[in-house]
Image (tube, rainbow, N blue to C red):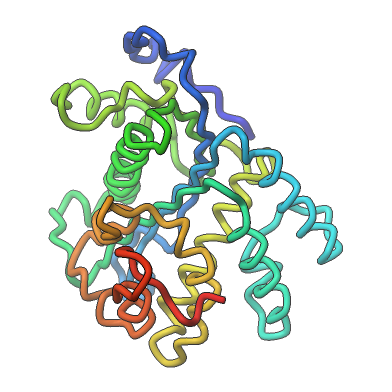
Length: 292
């Protein structure tokens, strides 16, 4: 299901952008993205919509692949890994612990979560009625942070190859058009879009282990959001990889590795968030006693 949209959008050539000098010499980061929840606003819709980007430096890609293939072997499936199918059920407790420990051990990974809290976000009538626009807006918030993470990468800026899980029923040629408009309007001193290979690609889950990993990361995040309020231990799978969540030089996560479109208290009032982001002795970024 690899959607090669690099050449054509609605029958016309896709927008092109100049490639900066020295781009190919930069070290590569492979970026894998997925989404969770739905984009509807009815009483039957999910209360929030989220996206995740898992940024894997080129030197860690072999370990990512080994991790995902190892998980498939451990649970005895040749199907693409999916949180709901393989890890969500009550009987999957050991699987969840195994998966959360294994992904947390991949070195150099950076993770970015974007959450749209439908109850508190400011949304225009168009955004509420157009699910594709809702997806595109959330994707933009995520990819802006991906670009900034590439610019600030330890050891020097890097280039990113972005692959997103294809969404059933969406025309991702329109997604490229949306991003092209964003890039055209961007100030040269704002988001460093030039550090990402153009255009991004939408792929099937079965095509890349990284997209399956992004699904697992989102599954852990969703479990913490939906169950961690009542039992903080249900957030332990997320907290095990909290060191991978992008943060500022001062250890701030909100706005960097986590973006809430709406009231940040959607997350910040939860016990696991407060425990994780409370600075403790030994570092400015906070730590959780539940992350082990």
